[in-house]
Amino acid sequence: MQTDNRLQLLRRTSIKTIAKLTAAKAWINAIETLDNIEGSLLPKAKDGRSKAEFAACRKAYRLVDAHLDNALKYLYLKDYRFMRAYQALALVNISMCRTSFFHPTPMVYANWNMRILTDIAIYAGKILAPPPPLRTKTKKKTP
Image 1 (cartoon, rainbow, N blue to C red):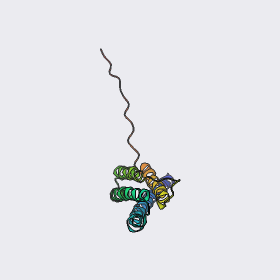
Image 2 (image 1 turned 90 degrees about the vertical axis):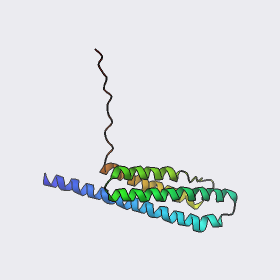
Image 3 (image 1 turned 120 degrees about the vertical axis):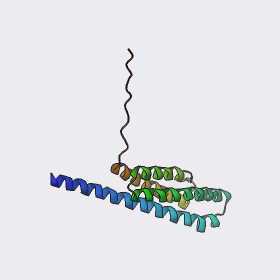
Image 4 (image 1 turned 45 degrees about the horizontal axis):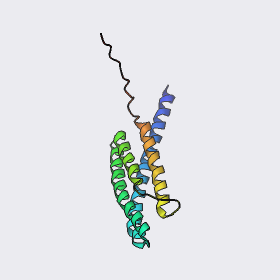
């Protein structure tokens, strides 16, 4: 019985570590990606299509940075539901940075990497605090 409790504690601690590491790494990547867009990609963009794409990505990653920052705050407050909500918002904003494999830019890999890290962090958060069960509809009996 004691061994079983220890295993559960160890598993939960490992999931917390995964949640912390992936959430922190996603936030760091968002900051680095935003710095790369503003410092290099946007100023060096040659054509109008690339400039428009990088401008949209800059706007998106500013929001991603803010959402992942909030997610980290809630992670350390152990409020995993709010953490997941902010991470989900970050995923929505990552999709605002449209990329195409047929018009390859550094943003293709950056977006892919951000999605994976954020998805892993969300999944770890779901293990730490599962969503509440769905309510079943009860049929009212009429007399």
